Length: 108
Image 1: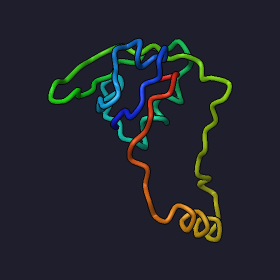
Image 2: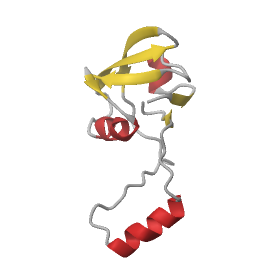
Image 3: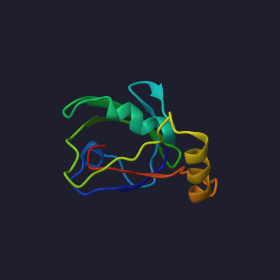
């Protein structure tokens, strides 16, 4: 999961992560673009997470201390119980594109 932005003063920056780093594991478990947010979302602020990432060709390891999400943060999730009509509408809206690149939030 490639970090596009790392916010000034955020937990990722404090841990030494930079934009362009590719996070491959959290606490020894491989992460992808889809599992990264879910994995961090299960942990409370203050939790410590060991991150492994590639910076260019170098494997780096750092400890990230999670911070509370800012008040202006919201999360959108797909409702797994959505019916066929809602799924078709969502698919038409997204036009079949998948998000593969994410930004590191101030929490991460």
